[in-house]
Image (cartoon, rainbow, N blue to C red; front, side, top):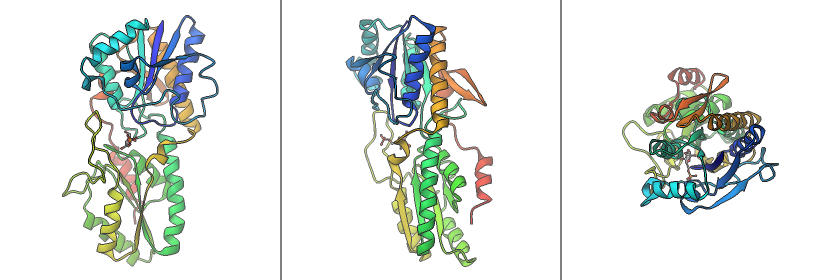
Length: 342
Ligand code: F6P
């Protein structure tokens, strides 16, 4: 078989592990060749690709980012985009595509599959909010980076008797905020699934300080919203999939919390630090397992499917199942975190 591989959407640690694993499994099975499209769907539309061989995918397991590059290009927002995808596949005699991406990249994959293109999806999102898989690779690395930051912010918050607000990624779901908040001992965690009442947050901080604590750590997901308002972002622009660029809710919280409580406040936005650098072992292993399973599925003709982690096993699930709804934070897990608030 000839297979095209691409990485779309926001990057995350572990993408190179997947690419390497697809090629290595294909080599083990024998008779498969690969091209890697540059910058996600943009490379398919422009027919810009490199050969993926054993040699070109050596030494990349531990490297962050993606050797292919990534973008948020949407072929369905481009005139004749779906036809261009088919033309590129024909010109390169490709039998199938393995797109590695989140809701947007795999959403395109799902539509292409409905249009008769052979695809096997690999789930990727730092936010861990894709349904049908227990975890996506890159998430654990992001949680560790955020936890390390919270540990560091704890000591300076304590030295200065400050409230420190730490903003982490998480557009629809607060997985990174909740996991890093639990691991880092946050006093308040604000997530998109539970719109917050700012006065309640302030009251909580006041009670904590009146009880003798001299500092507080608030972890907020960038997509968290106040009960009486909309998304708070420092930006206006949207991407090709219609998502507003997020980032900056911590700026508002810093100002409001300081004004309302009188406690000196500072904010830190972790941003893309969470997506950069070397993947943790967990993410290298998960990415590798996904890559091997995706290649095996393609060889078996299991198209329209996505590889997924279910418990400890890697399984195939219909792309449609993964794309139906985002996977939101389990309320029970939030209740566990609440035990430690205050
Ligand atoms: O979709 C994953 C994500 O990391 C979000 O958490 C974040 O809002 C967004 O990507 C950032 O995207 P970009 O890299 O395009 O700024």
